[in-house]
Image 1 (tube, rainbow, N blue to C red):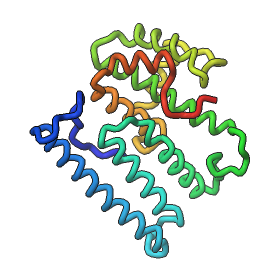
Image 2: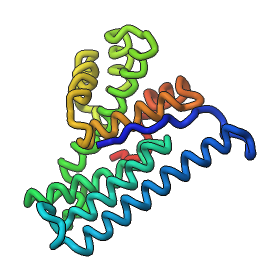
Image 3: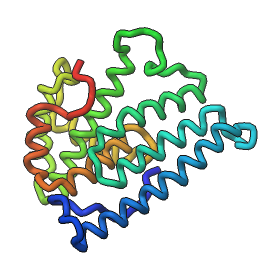
Image 4: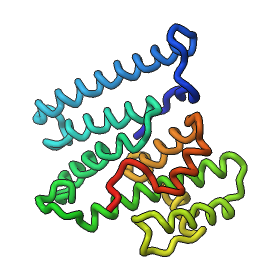
Length: 218
């Protein structure tokens, strides 16, 4: 579950030596300390699985992936940086359920579930953009119609019908998911990044035109 942390100030990088620079440096130092503590705990669990009652041989790896993804989220970095770690974490969770996730498949070509995970990440982007529009006072349906027109040209949905209702349902659905789920975690991280982006409107316009950054395009 994503922790509640103080928001990182948006805008240009603060000038070295300024009050905002020192606050940012202190905040990042606190995040680093928390990250190292979590990684130390994850490492111990990984090396001593017999002492982790109720866990599995993969629990330490899952905790380590989550710790780094949490750090990326809390520090206000682009959310797509944590997407590979979230996929690895979900893959190990599948192994705990005796399911071999596509990320661990020996086949080289993309599998349908790979594409499904890709679509979920793009759904999170569309839902997050709608969330931002609604937060800033825009009408939900009009905004959803604008997003749907753009999403229809994203590669992951090029052969699927995307309507305003589709986008609104993505937003409603992801808001109802557990915070530890891949799509909800992506949604929360994207919303946080967009809220704090110094050029948010330009960023949203770019994503709508070109699709979300950072993931495989085919």
